Length: 324
Ligand SMILES: Nc1nc2c(ncn2[C@@H]2O[C@H](COP(=O)(O)OP(=O)(O)OP(=O)(O)O)[C@@H](O)[C@H]2O)c(=O)[nH]1
Ligand SMILES: [Mg+2]
Image 1: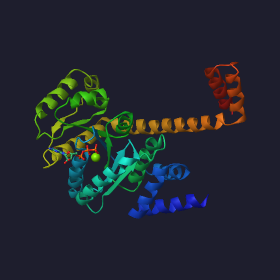
Image 2 (image 1 turned 90 degrees about the horizontal axis):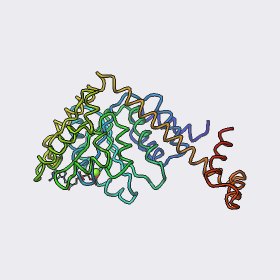
Image 3 (image 1 turned 180 degrees about the horizontal axis):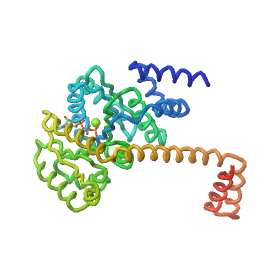
Image 4 (image 1 turned 135 degrees about the horizontal axis):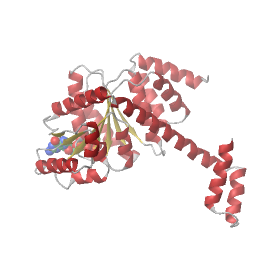
């Protein structure tokens, strides 16, 4: 074993015993990616599979962090040792804003809770691997639940939501927010809806839009099979209205998952997705390498000489690679 994996192992053992500084260092390695991250994820995987993962997603500025802060306080008061991971799939530049959230949240967290933000740091596929690894690490270190906050702007957060056992989708009154969430594919993944900023005009319209969409069968096909209909909760996270109800809904959904046995499917889906992401990453790296190799050059030359098409070159290379 290399010395770096030795030190990861030591850090991991200390993190599992509750040493927060070690946990922080491991999370930094996970965020950086590469071999070290893989070793840590492997160690964590062996002893994970217990925590409940709650995803909180929604449009930028919908109040996810404010709501998360409320939940953090309620869970902490109930004696839970929870972890919050704030994920920003956009640019590393907004890391500062997330940090601002973190500082606000630190005031609300109990001594035992752990709050962390994670940005892409510009490497592709980074979050797709870093988020599940971080979840497994928190899980191994005994944090329950793990709350993941992501900004809802594209595919990444739908994926991250897919990594959760319970997904909370936050919408706000006005501007057809519910319709936007529907377009972004967020309604399909929602287990709980929160109409936040319900102190603003149009909150009841937003609620009605969501009810209609649920009725219209965007999700009701699933509802008929499972018997579960996502609740819609009106909240004002500035004064804390609705937060207890959201907490109750998270607990009810967790119970539903356990009673129906669906929890195993979710955990399986999460691991299958992780394997898929890792395969894609490995194949991508292999493709990069091959194109710079002798084999790659031979094919590139043939394509340039118009002897074979790019598609034929790709297929031929893949066929040759799969032989090894
Ligand atoms: N009126 C009102 N304002 C709220 C409510 N919840 C949050 N806000 C405000 O909305 C703004 C955005 O809140 P955040 O919690 O940072 O929203 P967010 O979804 O985490 O934002 P990003 O992480 O940047 O996507 C802040 O100024 C909050 O104070 C609410 O229930 N009512
Ligand atoms: Mg936020």
